[in-house]
Image (cartoon, rainbow, N blue to C red):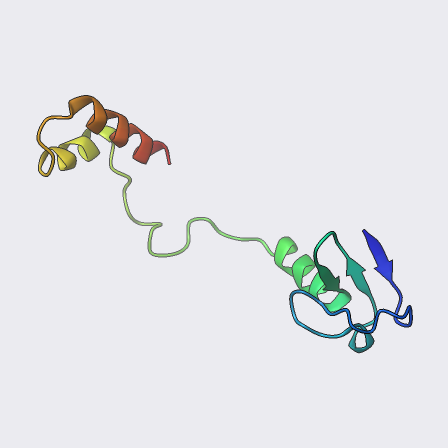
Length: 95
């Protein structure tokens, strides 16, 4: 990666995230196929440093069904295919 100073002759470059041109920001950093400005970096730092709670939201209170319960639900719709239903139930549970 390289830092592109404000007046390096790359005035056609812009931030891939917010779209601001190089002359509208303090610094524009070039990646392999993208650019990011100092303002978007500041936003990313804030996002990374803000603690998140994984127990919030609509799914926090829901109980995860066990593979046997998932297979029982599949039994209501699929005839036979016992090994496939078992494999699918475990895969869904592990996902």
